[in-house]
Length: 256
Image (tube, rainbow, N blue to C red; front, side):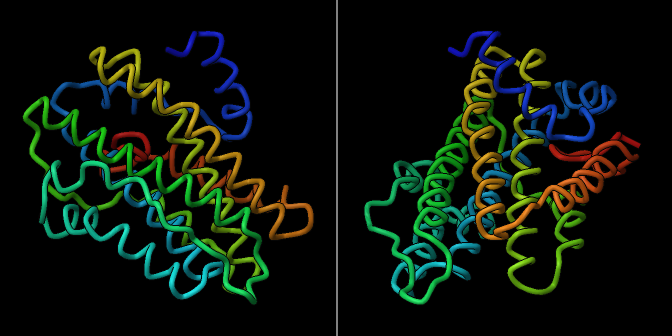
């Protein structure tokens, strides 16, 4: 179990990176028992989307054709469950690991480091997907697909439309999504049942590392100072988090 001092050490750089804290109004809404199904289902889908984003990124920019097919097959059972409601916990058990190598295409300008970081992230996100599903099953919460919030779309709509700036922006946005997730898990944990609280605290390390990995990769790809672009997306992210929002979700703004 992570100690309070370790939690503080994890959250300090996260809170310095984010331009605003999660508003108390969101926490008050999120801790209501009636909203637990929404929180868990949206969290489940956020884990899948985080893995998909990393998968699409390396498929587009970095890996050879065979590895792209391997990545696609890796996600198939999760996507069939989430979007077509095919399968169950048994069909997903143990599927988060991948034994085959994911190799860079010969003419890729991006390093194997990008691939390795993203593959590790994918493994962890898919494992977390399964863990959320376990919690839902223990509570008798049925999976029902729900639409995505405005959050990720609001960030992605501001990306540059030319390379390599598009990739740099995608990586910066990934950093903000992971950092905000980490901050919200910490905000929610004290108000949750013990098993969910322990699960959320256990996620802090991986989410914090994911945000740092995304930022490191963004700097590597840019080959230049990205602080101005980081600040730009930080402002957009803070506006999405601190403005009124009619659609309550894991990454939503102030409940309207």
